Length: 172
Image 1 (cartoon, rainbow, N blue to C red):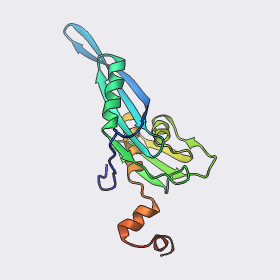
Image 2: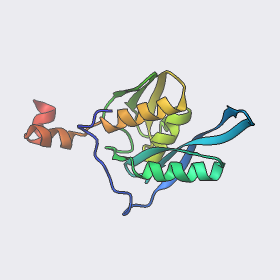
Image 3: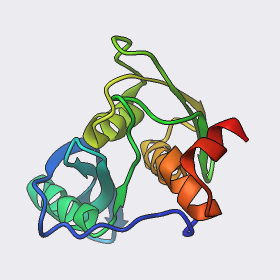
């Protein structure tokens, strides 16, 4: 992920809602038989522009989910939302997973599948068109979606970064 545009957020002062994306049972084969453990991917967000993801691994499901939530609270990013949608089209990639996110008009809803839907809804995006390209592995899709959202910039940020007036950004 490009670290230049990511805006880190502290989780202590905001109310976060968690959403389980995926849970998997993993077996380790030893001389004494199979040892089972669980891994959980969890997305947390305040549904107002802040979102993060985490991975938890433990011998029991509830412990894995709790660890995932704690990890997700450490990886929060701020996402620009304008009128319930994203400011511009963005492509995100992580390993084999690629995603394309496009803005949509009011009333469209979240047109995304599986892992992407959880991330976008946790971020508070109401209207968006999204497509997962490449890998359908939930780990890679979640990380690619977070990458795409973290690299988005609204017009105010662009104007401030360039050191120009907001009208100059749109009118040249």
